[in-house]
Length: 412
Image (tube, rainbow, N blue to C red; front, side, top):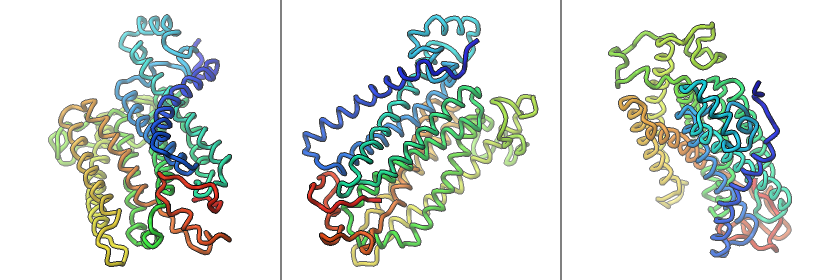
């Protein structure tokens, strides 16, 4: 009998992920050295940006794994039939596919599933390296607090546990939804770290004005609404409820079709089940779909209004331009992208490309909103040293690096 949790190949899978992570790290390090990058804060930023980029890739790859029904392509974890790769498990995969040709196991699905795991362990390896380096170099001027990297390490361990549960609980919708929401949390954590490092080159006056702005405080509500909408979208996808409605704006030829919200939002139930031992009904799937659709209207309007407010925001000086004007434009573009891809999923029968871009758009929304909301005011009283105001030490653009002789302080 196959053990769903088989740690025998865990070390080999981890090493595979580390090797995968070395490829982009080597490329980035080579280019950074050629451009004259110097100083740990500058390297910390570059490596964190790389990890953020790969994490967003991982979100999309996870959606690809789910949408191609490859989530159980290897029915154990973290390897594949106790092996490091599908090549070594060729015989077992062939036997499982022959026994059930329409089932979840095939050679292509196994490779997709293991590709997702390799990329996930690669991201984990990068985060581990960043945490070790952050603690070792925490006293360097302008370095990010090592607790950021530690929190990210805790996050990646939790995501690994969710990955294991996804397999052992046979794609239970609440677990898969939680796994996706965890991925979005990782995007937010890494974005915040990059943003804190980037703000070293921003005028203190502008940082303080934005930190105290009511518009920034309102942005947290926008982010909360977006999180709810992403969770609803994940619930639609993990329950395969996208095609419960195949027309817009009506559904099944009605403005308010028959819907069973109680069953649709019964959280603890198996994939395809209603939690009472029967199959989930169309009315329950319709309730899931319509809830996401209605919330989408609200979130779209809120994003349009908030984007417009960002474009108009000023810091109280005569300067007519702020960095947040561009953020407002980006939010508008992302809102439009989500509208188009969301409609495409419905009217075009859930094409793979549209579904993947829709997931990417959600991750980019989180990225941009966290980028907008993260702000360090850096009050003088808590950031001064015997060498003078530490603002001076942090005023160089991050890509130029910092000198070892500057005040020892950490950005937080």
